[in-house]
Image (cartoon, rainbow, N blue to C red; front, side, top):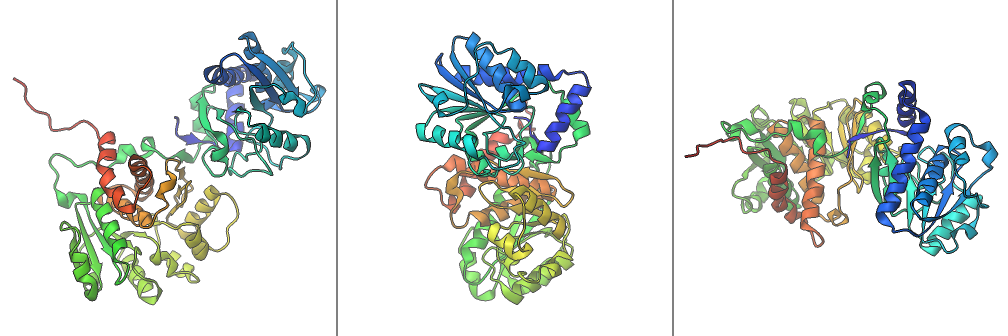
Length: 491
């Protein structure tokens, strides 16, 4: 699936550029309607179909789909929300080409229907559904009719994924040219069912003028810079991560350290309070363990290039001092959990020290404590946070967003629900640190870590605990790895 994501305004611009470049609007609507009809043909044998059309271009797509389905032998009923005389442009022309009658808009349209095509409102809807349309959405839910939606289920905001009052529940959504944020952000993503991206003839060249800055998170976004080991390389080429640990929640730092090693760091050190060192030393033998009092000596060594602070580290003044000391030394770092909470109420002190080589990994609660009350979608909030902090922000959740202070952002959609388990965030922080240490830029490392984290969880399945994630990573990485560069001889 093409990785650029377009806002509603950017999609309108792409449409306009295509038309200005000679691609007729009527041709685009015919292609969109055909893509919609094709998905119905793929999913349902000839049956009784109700097509619900709205007053704009989404309704025009519905008229095209209705015509094509009727031609294919489906028994099609069509209802229009609004007056046909008010249709304009291409939508009016497509309505004129429909020869089988238009029925009054209301619940009776659903009688005896086997499935429904929702072509009422697209991604640009800006107000809550009400009145007859809201009643129709409720009736669809009550009757549990399968729905294929055009562009986005009616009632879902295309930019935020918010449900505007109520929204259609689709089994599949056919959208056009590129995804919109609402296809990936919750709760809209849950309304879409399977999302099918259709090529309707808009040239990809228009993206150069649209200049999208949001992507679907996946290997296409970051695989080109992935730090695969080189045949001639050694562990010192692959960076050295320092994870600071606390005296009580010792498991968090150990999970982060193991993930950093799995993520590609050549060496990993845990620096922890002296009293807890025996606990840390009883863990993975490949992890170096030293006392936290050696932190200044570790900072003096430039080979220890990435620091992960916060997992199980404890909050308060001690953590604040630790974070500021590392930042003052100019180290790239991942600030997670306690390293973020420690600056609640004093965030500006932290922000003055940050740069785009620092990754902040808050969940919603930590984000609120650090940035205060924010308005907008998860995508907008992550962007606002990154711009304010001057750092890369990984806003964790089922629809995690990674945002760069320059405005770039990636939306992740592969996280299964069983990732909601203690320690999963520690693994994510360590994984991102390991990728950074091995050579990835901070934004790309964060995006890769989120995707790999979700893919590993998907590979394990229900019953997942955080310890499983690191063990699942080698198989996930093997599926992405390029062919071995070692070569060889054949007789």
